[in-house]
Amino acid sequence: MLVLGIESSCDETAVALVRDGETVIASTLASQVATHAPFGGVVPEIAAREHLKNITPLFLEVLSKASVDAGAIDAIAVTQGPGLIGALLVGTSFAKGLALRLGKPLIPVDHVHAHIHGALLGLPATDRASAFPALGLVVSGGHTNLYYMNDPTSYKLIAHTIDDACGECFDKVAKLFGLGYPGGPAIEKLATHGDLRGAAMPRMVERKSQLLFSYSGLKTHMATVLRQKPNMAQNEKHDLIAAFQDEALGQLVRKLTSAVALYPQARSIIVAGGVAANRRLRHLLSEGINIKALFPDVAACSDNAEMIAAYGYHMLQAGKIPPQATWDNYPRYPFEEHMA
Ligand code: KG4
Ligand code: ZN
Image (cartoon, rainbow, N blue to C red; front, side):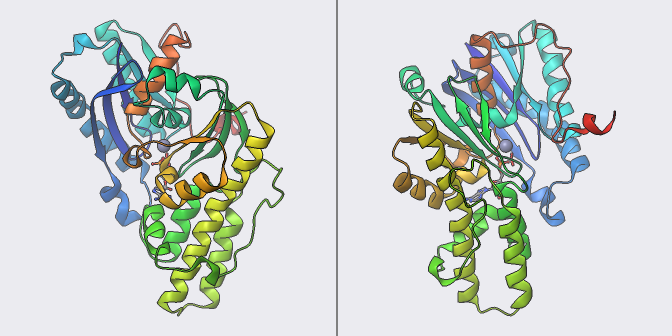
């Protein structure tokens, strides 16, 4: 079954064709990172306009790369949310129109859940099946969510951040140090020059058994150190950044260790989202966790349409799609609560 995936929730427009939730047939992506970089973060209106410009050429490009016409598409999966509403509307409106034109099923998917499927792509169906039950950790710029998953389409949220997301913390700390956006890759690179024992870090949500994440205290600590010592030597700065990175990532390892103990039936941990690209995290998890760890390819950790198509395939197989395409996007924040 050939599923078309469409992603437009934030600053990447992406379209992909994936067979049976497993094999990527063709994939395209237009990144807006350079467009938003001068602003130090994503500007929602610019993002929506860029998606609108890019989506049709990307769709045509993916068909051309796969050497198929639109009639070969069996189903269309699209990011329903969470994300920037103007950005989401571009992808979902395009997908709704296309599904109507082709007379094919339309599958709205949760972007955060879909990240997990980036780590399952390319695995043969038997290996994929043997990964479950699993613990799924999505660590991105907007989320630090830990799920218990019985199968590829069931997500029980067992831990989340009580303040900043892990990637957001990397981005904010990078901004403090003038390292640009996105901050994660820049911090990872600088940390390799530092000695992580060279600086002390506060430990957040310390009780190991407590399944919660917290990152704003670590960010505040970094801001305070920088304010107290604005003219820090380069090597001191590197040590500080290396220690920061290990504390931020160490929190993920500690909480995953607790979750593995609490859910002994889990056969694997699946780690995805932008922060999963971090090689130090992969190393720490390989040392600290005693069950199989699955990650997406480094390049597939950030937003892409392959994971949307793969998740859409599993949703369709599980019969988890709404009968009519009358659904709305859902937002990054639950604004409805404030409208009552
Ligand atoms: O999943 P993603 O591409 O977008 C969403 O937020 O949905 O994640 C982006 C986040 C950013 O906060 C970025 O700084 C972080 O992932 N990130 C990293 C690394 N690469 C990207 N964080 C730590 N180490 C990295 N190598
Ligand atoms: Zn994402």
